[in-house]
Length: 616
Image (cartoon, rainbow, N blue to C red; front, side, top):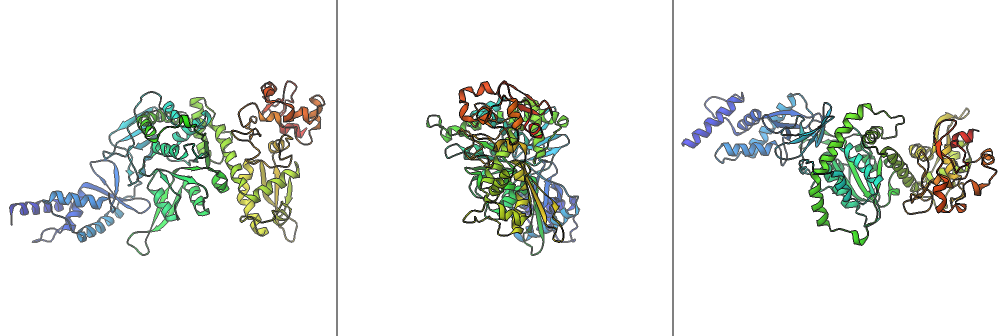
């Protein structure tokens, strides 16, 4: 036996002895025993709560390594064995035997939770920078700091790239705004969303960049996702099945679906579940009947031209940012943009972490009087508004309402229901599902999604109910008809605000037209925009759309109070050129009866809100 061989054997025996592994006398430890001993000496082994075995270095970065896989513990043990045994290579059978033993060791340990990119730690948030040294940034109510070792256990994936260390170098938010082509309102909403993206324990709305071709949707999405969670593939095409989607989502904290035109029902449901927290059961590798659960809650983005192709339940989870067309003389080359973004990234992170620290400080004091669908996210927006003096909460509500209206444009049955309710007046309609199907305006050629019977009509109305409420149509299905059938009755009524909007003679659709993306106005059109809870606005931002709305039905007394005018003097758009809009909307104030915000139409306007006027 050579000296090197003897020394190698002695080292192997010592390693095995240190690890407490017994070896039969007269024989040296097997390769498998040596691999097990190396792993137990250098790594803490455990199972995650979803049943996956991991190992984490006892004296290194707080990074969990899966036992198997390309960058897992198996390959690390093979390398260490090679280094310590003068270039000898452990056999595949020895590695396989060692992994089986180590999985048993991990199963006996207390379960732990390895996090992806961001995690909570007491009152702070920890962000994994993703480098080989395991460095992180800890953001708390008193500020943020870089740390050499994370206090929280993280895991990595092959899709992740390192984040740059944040550096205070001027105002990073200003530098970010220079890289985007949205308006001030959209930019502030985006900043608030980015701040929330570093808070792991809440549902995040799906950031949706919308605009025509040439508005930079894909590049903006790539850049924004890269700020949070850099990846070699920040933009993904729509996955082909649920297993493919689960694999992508499990291995990234933030990801973007690019150029979405149509989303199948299964993917729409999967995206909704990924927003609120998802778990997908899959067969474990190398087994026939064992399973693992992929659990995740993710930060998602998408780019689209037409949001009307999306499902209604998904629309309620969107936060839309409109991008403007870039003139040719202002268009920049991608290499130039990449360089500017890479240079600005550290300062952008620093500014976002500064804002996040302030948000964490004021968040306990923030209470919402009204809670929208994404209430946790809305609370973050309210905290950002309190710190910055912005109005992102109102912008988000308007954005969510418009997104739902866009999606309902793609639902023929929903549009027919809207038309029926708008024609019914303030009392609304109460009918069975069968009567509803008979009374709604029916197209000559039934669309694919049109319900074929009363059961499907009732089910579809139930699914559309949250979206219909968003645009001002209340759906109540708590009543039953008379015996013996006791059929379920659906009561559909339009809110006073919606009736006030649809009563406008200025609308080309007439008094019976529902609120859709076509008649609510847009950034370029002259039609009416959806009014803000505090008063509508013209799509082009000039004046208040509420000025063009006629008095609601049954409001004759109000017309007399205004001096006996008719529809033309009460709000006909043709009688008020745009140059006079500013003068008409100057007198604003709360309702004199219920104190809700309202708008007085001109110097002699009625100081009551639509609800109080209608009640009178």
